[in-house]
Image 1 (cartoon, rainbow, N blue to C red):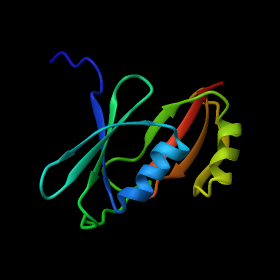
Image 2: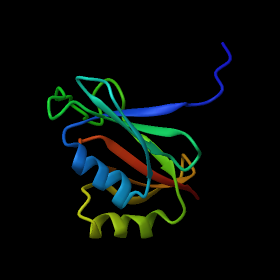
Image 3: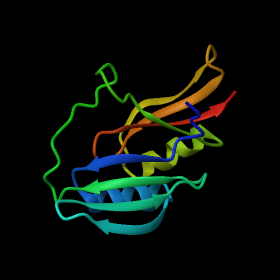
Length: 129
């Protein structure tokens, strides 16, 4: 196998409008095309590194999935940033639920903050110490 990189990230949404307000309005991802696949629509957003985020809109009919930190499956998505603490303040001001306030993880060499998107997906901002 010769895996080069992550090509895209997909998230099933409960409410596409709340998800777009979050990913575009709060995180600042730029909208790309939307593709109607019949039973669902995929809204593409540009990630900072040129990759894409796919938001799946099942018209409010996406199955509910648990996203607990210790559940089997995807744990969280992490984005490298500068100044985690300042960004936590922006997230709080926007009403975003913080699940782990800014803290240093010296064993990992990073400072992090964990928060939830409107679908209950855990996201992380991290910066190198």
